[in-house]
Length: 283
Image (cartoon, rainbow, N blue to C red; front, side, top):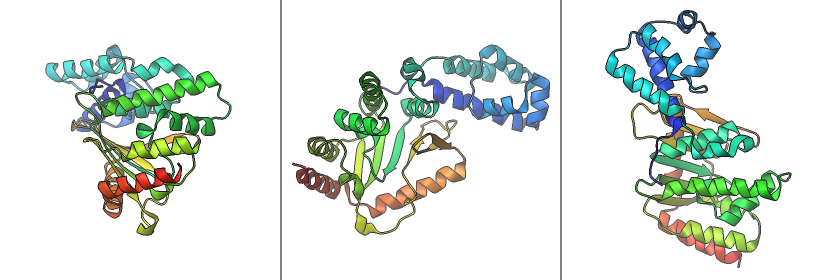
């Protein structure tokens, strides 16, 4: 799957541009909200990308900010593209908003840097491993619901192939190789799959012997984009929801932690050997 025009990314870019234009005009959020006749809270949702904006409504902002013709047309085009539906939106309310946001970000990302303590990253899970994880996390789901969630995960993985594949760098804790998920056969197949080398995928194992490190608090992913106007995002997931960090300093700190983990982890070659050995323990 080639990199596409993700409505999620378009909405975030447009939100960033709206913030920039307001700040450059020296206007407060309340001043703009009063001019446009919306609440400051609604404006905040627009400027953070939590809510989309239709072209006809965007024109009011562009008039207020006195945006020139060329920039106006570019921003209106962004607005139109942000209204498009991504493939993930066909699943409706089955997927929560945090997960659909992640999928939308991945759809146009250039890189993903992912640290996982206990589970194989979703982008690298085999079908049966993914099914076992979903069944454990959502014991009340029907077979059809589980099948649909597995299908979403496999569709996400298409970003790792095609003309412009996602560059994925993964560090997994040694615990991932020992955490029993599903059956011994499922574990062996999953670990062998992780050991397969691909040009755009790097997998490293962080051994227990590496000692304490800054990411002991939990797993995280950093989604990176090629365009300057698209801000990199840190994704933090918990049992019930997820959190996105977009502040430049937050992203920088997580990037530094990931660099530390990569340096402390085994090399890709040694990691592949460890994964093969771990797979053999399950056979």
